[in-house]
Length: 131
Image 1 (tube, rainbow, N blue to C red):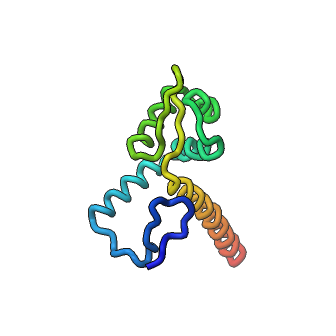
Image 2: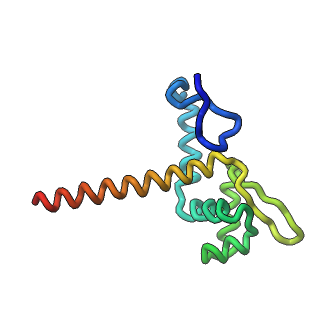
Image 3: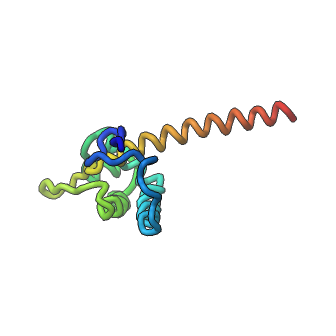
């Protein structure tokens, strides 16, 4: 059994193809994680945090052109899943990503989206040309 070559996942996990089939419980837990991440605002927040390393709520609000309360609400959802962690510095609360697997997932998801978009547009152009 090899270890996962995905950067940053700790502790190393067995290769996906060598793991037993997901149980129903594991499937539901994974679904819950994907539901948390299936939000454009939260994905943008994560990307901003990847780029900066750590940001306070007001910095994230400015970067995303959102109200601080709305940003705080979304960050709480990510914190509840253990994806980000707050750190108080006086009156400000700074957030950082604590699970490096999320960074890899965001990167792979973005790559998949861009690649799939290219395949779809090429296929669509091919169908129009054949018409």
